[in-house]
Length: 445
Ligand code: GAP
View 1 (cartoon, rainbow, N blue to C red):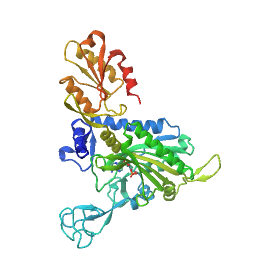
View 2 (spheres, helix red, strand yellow):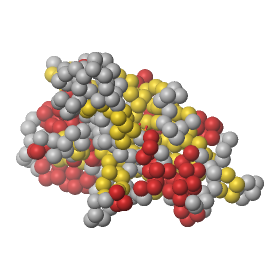
View 3 (cartoon, protein in one colour):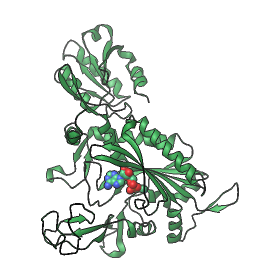
View 4 (cartoon, rainbow, N blue to C red):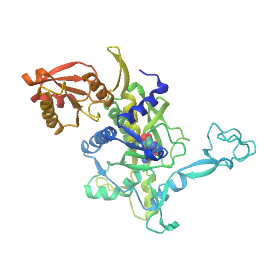
């Protein structure tokens, strides 16, 4: 394995070179902590989201899907506590105009006092006392930029679920316990973004809110903790790189009674990439209070009325993609040469196979093209006839493509092709007309 210090650097460089992730607006010098997904990255993230959706929505009869708008009524964010509580204390340097989190360990002395020293320009006594800074992005609805028209870009997708809870419950004829799942963009004006796509200002969440009877919340909380860990291990993420972190009382978000993070050992340390939260009846009760609409539930079995408790599973699609890429990244020596390979789980790999004619003559390109056209109807596959076969294999190793299919002299004679396995480097001869079913068997899981 490469040393952990430069793994991030290597991954960022590979991500750009191979078309996974590009800096946003790069030709203009880039936009701080905003990233674009290229041809391979968009497939990887889509595969992660589809797998999540399949396991959360399609495979469960007690969870419904939703796609709520990013813009919501501004009162939603008052009710949710984000207007008052979604803040970081910041200090400004009056000299160099830089802004820092008040708990920035580089600050010496007490901000607001003459002894405090700016970590950027070194001036003394120029740091303001901490002021609260809201992390929500603001914009205006309609043409007039006035206070009454202020709306926010949602900082979490969860609220779109809470305000639609009754609509979904009634239209889908579900009964409690049941859940609503959603994948969508969220925005936070983070003060200390960074580490590539780990903490960004625009990101995607995969969230599921499970509505339960109060008193059964602890049981469901444990159930969902288990399910989520199993799902991640099923993605091929190494179990020893995953651990639980329970929130201490001062870490708990304003809405949570209990929370656990699933952490991954990133090159920059153990960090959260998914959270399981017991949000109690906080959100539904607050929306009931602020909207004046009843959001309680009449249990048809017992005739009891209650405001459901919510167990939330909240994952970042981008952070999960970073985990998957880092976990898959590997360097090794093969035949005296260095090989960089992304060992993606086949279900997540952006490209499932690449087709190579060994040489561009003797009927090989024609057969390879026919095969490629056939496979393309089933999988995202790639055609490459440029350079030596060894270089073509290396390019696909870096893209994380599980199978390389080579059409050689024997193929035109007997209709078989060579299938090379990305991980074992083993090669097998397979009849070309059996390739679709051969790959299907290998790619499942
Ligand atoms: N609805 C609950 C909620 O939003 P959170 O712990 O603030 O909880 C959940 O966020 C997940 O969203 C995180 O575990 C992370 O994967 C992702 N996330 C949060 N802020 C992010 C950011 N600035 N950039 C990328 N992903 C982020």
